[in-house]
Image (cartoon, rainbow, N blue to C red):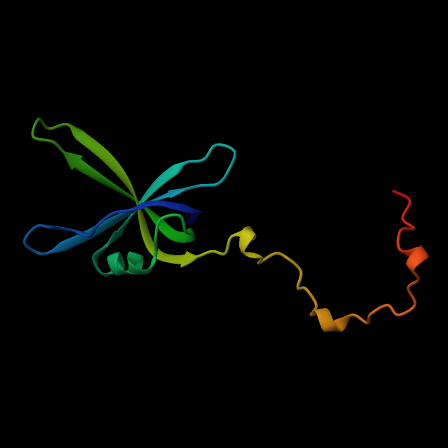
Length: 125
């Protein structure tokens, strides 16, 4: 599965416990009719994947859904879900020209040599 959108926030890497478990969170805002702010966590060595990204950038993140069960001290069972990222890549926005046709160089056009001064404004509008 994947999530695409614009980076809203990238958190700092957090370290937990004596074994040094690392986690880093990123929030991506989807670009659809009803935008969603999706929080994705990267863990352990995957936290370093976020080092080269910044807020405002368009990205695609490959994710796995994770679920776990927890029994609280009162004996009640609770369930939690998380979205875990394992790969991220930058996307080019349409404004950057990715989907625009190539423009030929100016010297690819032959200049018009048969122009007369009285013909300069013959357009009907």
